[in-house]
Amino acid sequence: MLKITVIKDKKKWEGFLLSQSYQPFFQSWSWGEVQERLGHRVWRLGIYEGRKMVGICQIVEIRARRGNYFHLRHGPLLANFKKQFPRLLGGIMKMARTDRIDFIRMSPLLPEEFDINFLQKQGFRNSPIHNMDAENAWVLDLDKTEEELLKSMRKTTRYLVKKGEKLSLEIIKASSIRELEAFLRLYEKTAQKHGFVPHGGIREEIEVFKKDGQAELFLARYKKKIISGALVIFYGNLAVYHHGATDPKFEHLSPSYLVQWEAIKEAKRRGKKIYNFWGVVPPSKPHHPWQGLTLFKTGFGGRRINFIHAQDLPLSPWYWKTFLIESIIRIRKGY
Image (cartoon, rainbow, N blue to C red; front, top):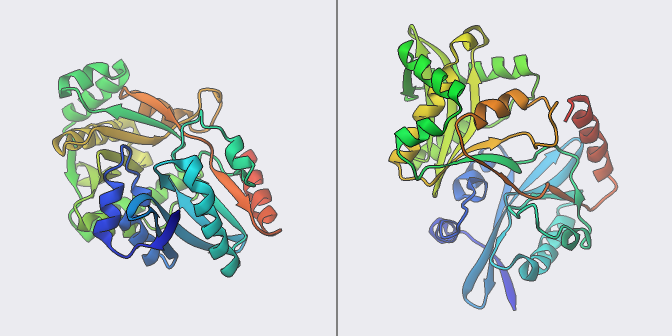
């Protein structure tokens, strides 16, 4: 008999998560703290068979004009998904009805080969949102020497890394509020140029993960001016490139290549197994707006991993307002 209980012990939660083969930071205790700082309610559910923990599921409640929903990012993590998920879902739906939630959205780390009919029979449907939580990701295995990693790069990528070194670009780790603010200004500029909505909570993400030594903000400085940066989360056996920005005035110097190379080397020094470049374009979409970004990431060598598309479970008619708005946005942006 499965039992579901709220977990209030950080060590117990992290102990289970870090024992998994893939350890998504969206299910980490710290990510829950980030969401709480942003004003969201968070539940951390543990799933037990007898006295043994067999799964976890972190739920973030999002309240927005277009609808209220429970967000399960890269979760739930279950020892036996098909066996344990229906019981867990029943508990989550009970919570949702109490909180007047319009839908449940989840992006579980299930391989793209997973039988999607299993979820559809329980009422789930494909989310209208595009490439949620890097369901198509590009990863680099770090079980090679630095020399081997350089050789496995695309020739142009390797050249631009070397170019950055010859230009005397200085790569530093942010250690002051002033440097953090400089990156956030760059991020706003990058969002304006490329036409995407900037993510909220980057400041909180850095502050919370930095406490446990799990975040670094790498910055490129040229003639005393910060011109590029990347936020990398170091969690479990992964290093994740989560956010990046470059001053449009200095893109001709290609500083982001050297920034990434320094982040990769730091991941190796920390003993991480995988460097996750985050989302890339599916091969079936050659005209996708992210093609340039995908070319940048894949140039470092590596491989693609694909998970199932994000799933929504409608619980009220208000869901269809969200569905319509997000569908229109996806089509307009060419996704």
